[in-house]
Length: 246
Image (cartoon, rainbow, N blue to C red; front, side, top):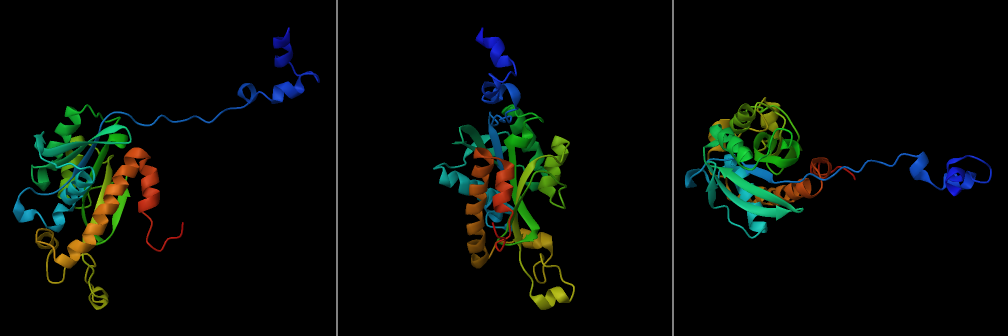
């Protein structure tokens, strides 16, 4: 006899009705965390000639992540050097394509197929890290999508996947010009007296490597935040300027 009384709205049962929110109010939907493997790719060129160049910042980032996990990126599959870690309960494949920068998409597409990461999983299961000449050295930026903006490795990936919808972490490698050079019309992200391409393929100075070293730690932390939490949380934390207030 009590069930009809609970469902009614008489004075004697009104208090009971208000104490049962599951019947009269909506509870927020809890999104399930992504599952399955995550592919984290750093872009660069293979070989010692390119090892310490700005264009290999993506490779350096993968090596830094592997180092923090106690790993060495030395296995070979799908035209890439790889290592496997675990973060946030998920298998994480760290990869450095050996196809040279301009053909990076061939390796990335093969790796996605190898680990069963389809187009519908890419948003939560593919992270690409690469250098960005249009960002100053010492900076980084996370984006969920976007055009290659002149980066041949990013263009190769978008071409191979048929989409710009993939998460990327761009590492700033552009050297600042003096204020007087900028006022004279120089571009902030071009080395003095050097073309962008030449600069990207030249070994970095020790002082610049020291600045980049700190950024690599931030990139490694950002990758963990993406995997363990979400891309939105990582962007909120790492895309702020140093002087932004929380």
